[in-house]
Image (cartoon, rainbow, N blue to C red; front, side, top):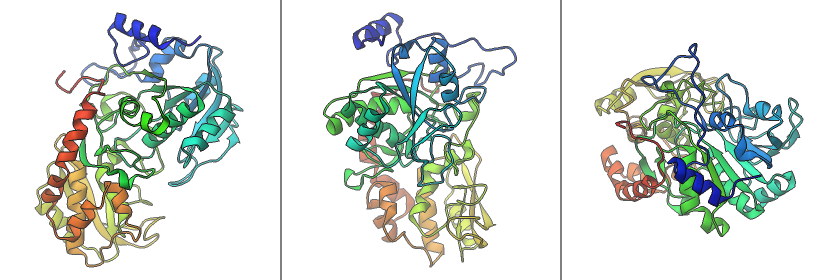
Length: 429
């Protein structure tokens, strides 16, 4: 039988584990497995749930929102693991953008089908929200929705808004909600970038958070439930969370000891995630953001750009990054099959690197050196940056540091809200 909120809170108080609904000790590391992060080892929310015998899910009809990143340390998918375990009554799977098994490209999903491996019904959540998504949860027959997806730390990465939409829908459908945590692969050291203006809300930004949020999905769930879900659904969702152990805010993904699975087709490595919060802004322009190459979001370019762009970007002396003149031919997306010129980002000091400031500087310099520069006709850049401010300042000839200064007041307000929801120690702890 599911624990009541009072029992959960009492259990947490007794164990000193505020902010989590599970306090089981992490399983001991095997001698054959390498320690990471100075001897520390990260255990995901799912690992801790499993180590506790899935007691949190006892007696519940469970549906899980996940994708190919929902794996164990040995790269087994958690749906396959849960389906084979009699201690869990897993009855449905919910797939986000790109699908549960990850077969769809950007802007696509897998639809409704029965999973060949498990026979479980798979429901599509992509582009569904509110009552429509609540109806999906109701039709599935579950009473608890579990979320376990690897995020990459940027506001416009859609999985965090799948999380938000599912939390709202769970309230409307009368379901409880559980979040299993995974690392922010680019650390949780800081939040940076412009904060969304609600007038520009979309599926790549539902609520006012910063462009690089510096939070885990569990921390975002707490923030959503405190700040945004009640306004959208009438009350907070009945939320339970399972924290990681061993993760600190300064950890990059290679310090975790966990396998990396591309969260989406154009996020092949943690290096991609490192630059994505800044260079994804090029989706709002007529330049290629590197889709269709082996280095998406690290390669940027267009027909007619030459070495002047890399030179202009390097002259800014941006911390932690160098720019190389590059030529490439995307196999799909913008400039498919055509050799184009541009830059490749080389991050040499990831502690000093600021992805959002870098992305802004690259937009400014691209517009200055290439007379073919244009925004996407639908002004999609405004949805990516969260308002029209960045676009208008760049068009007016503003310097990168002027643009960065324009969002500092809103960012300071968001950081104060964010601070209340952080659950992991700082790099110096």
